Image 1 (cartoon, helix red, strand yellow):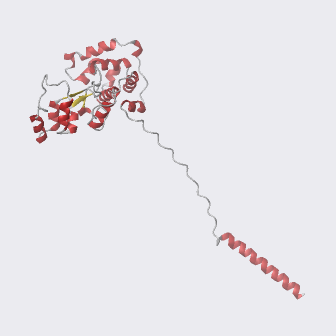
Image 2 (image 1 turned 90 degrees about the vertical axis):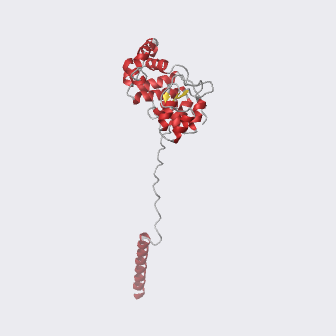
Image 3 (image 1 turned 135 degrees about the vertical axis):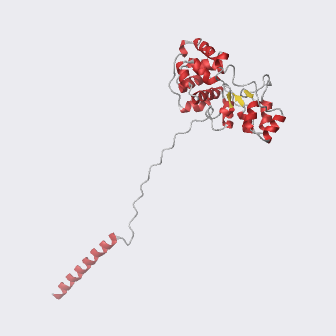
Length: 265
């Protein structure tokens, strides 16, 4: 699988689209991006930022020969280990994919928002491969995945109300306060300019589709007008010919009678 994609950078329009989708201020989306998705969504090789998690791979594989092999090769272990991450996770991911492609892809965090592959449905994708393909397309796709995940967890109401504690708890887990996520979000929001304290109109389906690199579906074609069938010509042995024949017969009889009368005189 080639992980290099178009790697399009995030635009102001992308942020505006997602703010409209979430029904919140642009400044709120920018604050979340600053704290939850700091940095770029792609590495120097145009690949999505990715971190493979061996303890998640262990869980995703389940008991059996594949997991035994992964453990033996150092690709899976039961519990998270501090400092066990290489500078580039892609070689490890590619090895894991030889054991089970989808389980490996589900065991990594992807793109701008670091959304885990096993959350692909919550992020708006039917399967993990489609999710990864979208992450290859743009940073806007990473933001889209974040937004869909936020909606799936019912967190957009907290974002709209700028209830940073409730939002951070839902997005980061119960340990959010230990890391100060709620105060970081509040501080980041406070520093945004007044021009971003606006809520855009709701995003359209076409705008959302463009973020993940999908073409807008064409409008259904109008049905062709129904053609009225032309009137079929009456057959030669039809009713019209019968009437004409009867009239001709009467005329002939009248002529014969007239001739007989003249001759009789």
